[in-house]
Image (cartoon, rainbow, N blue to C red; front, top):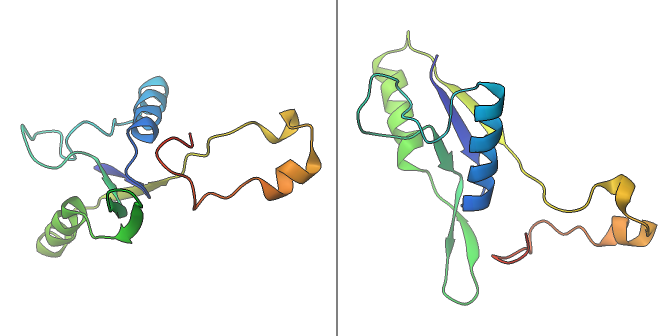
Length: 118
């Protein structure tokens, strides 16, 4: 079955972590094409949101072309399956390394992070 990784936000560093961990575990890699016999086409990952705006970047849900193509393919060929693998990457200190319980409780706000928050 083809594998396609689903990431919430467009982030090169997150995608590089996924690529590294997949290579290390011997899993299909996100930069490869979804169908192994392809020479071009959709790569095996897509994002659920796109950031818009110059100064204040906001996330907008947007169906990726890759997802639309996969849906079309499964409608045309119901016998072919595609595995969608949701990926979440969390950056920060490990909870057991944090000294302050208050920081642990109140410092984590995943939705307000920007380009430089990682």
